[in-house]
Image (tube, rainbow, N blue to C red; front, top):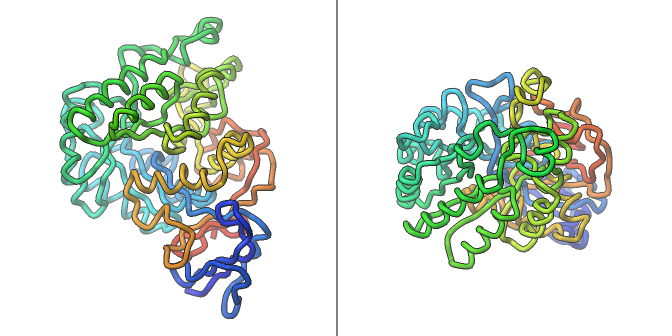
Length: 428
């Protein structure tokens, strides 16, 4: 593999430096580095970050290839600056056996646009009744360390406790979709003023908060790790903050759309805004931003949820829940966190690369941009600003809430172990 010299990049937003890639590794970082024998990428003051890591992606394969495939999903990931994604288990068949997780893992290896780490189901068929083959999935070629029934909540406290106890043996983590099912029957959007005015079934914040409160206590009781998926309310923030103050081993994620969008958008009845958990209030959005800034919320995860056109272009009540997010996540974080002064680019690297890689044990990812480290990198034109056009997405689906909205930043290059997967905004 040839040498690549990235010239004049602002590493983590700092002063411009040169970064020399040799093969799969960063060979040198400094100023005035020799370009002899190297392909030169003129960064021109763009920001260089470690390759992004998404702990919460839906690739849909196997079973829903009309929405997304491992190939199209990883191409979307590379377009958004990601070098590793964790693929959720709610496929058809469910990824609750070693065979299915190995299939997804090998598809990721075959396509090569980013590393794909499967997430194993907690329970058989996501039915919440019986633990899945956690040990077998961990011992498989996929080496699963993260388990989740995402899309459904592990609502039975006994099952959740057993899962937390089981994964301790290999330092695994259970990622909980916090949604008390009895409190959300028939729910269509956030419960509040807007739902009352629209006459749509309300989804109360307490449905999320009650599960988080239970699960952090269970994690404390058994001495295990629990991760909270797509945290969305101010009350949830306070529970996680309290749990961390007690030394409970809990981590939490927030999605880009919960950092930017509110339930006021549902007044349009446009199903593109229908998502699980639902868009919340402005108060919740501000609390989430502050919690991400102060570290109460550990990471940003996309919850990239592609759906075919017919599943979203219908009446609100019948529409599927979810939004695509891999190709817009970094722009939304720049808009909500960097532009507002809540995070600098080093903070973005921590929340979108370093910490998700640590939580999911993604070897070789989230590493410093320094000599001797794997060349998993993304280059961002932070001065760019433009309208989102889903027609240009690499994802198979187009269900973005940002169509036509102006957002800052554009990923121009992505490298996976020194191999360019995105060059000048185009997939290789």
